Image (tube, rainbow, N blue to C red):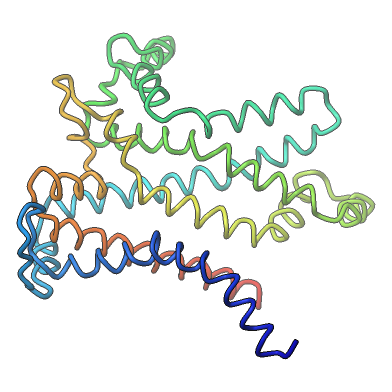
Length: 295
């Protein structure tokens, strides 16, 4: 079999998979880019081309700026909470590998990641309840006055951030735990002989060697944070049932513009902005890791 025949066989074998991937992934992205430059009300067959007018209008839209700001605060807050905490928990669980309770610890940490979003959000909504929630009851024991957690514009963002971090923590711990288990034990033995304690070994051996895994976890966590929707939709709904009015996020704003206001082109422009922001931040994360690795 010649080289051309081998490459032809590989291409023929991969073509169905690539075709399905292009139809499921690439085509929707291209269609959103196309719609972002048109005005469409989802009912009419006519889609007038308006160029970059949707993006110009986004720049001056206060609701869009609010949604972008809230989404960015939640995403970076979840990133700063989840990644360091997950790495520490993974190290602690790994140190207790010989314990009989090690499987319990792993399951307990990972369980929030597989719990359905709506029941979990409803449970947290009860925890943050101003009158009946256990959080205010516990804080009152320390003399802290009750807080309207889900009715304050700032505290409601913090509540959504806590819920997202609680859900993302299990997956991050699992990935870090796999990475720690594959680190060479000889390095820790040498550090112990040199008098290094557990904290020094963690800071100067575990953390540097987990840079590639830290990059992966950071990217996944940040992307998930920018795509937050269900948490704000359920957790931050007001007493009358109007969902997400206190915590306006990008995905919620897109859905309202697309399916409530019938401005599909405008919603597509928001989706394009979200895509560009996520790509830019992912590139920055890769660049930072590459520079540190070279250093």
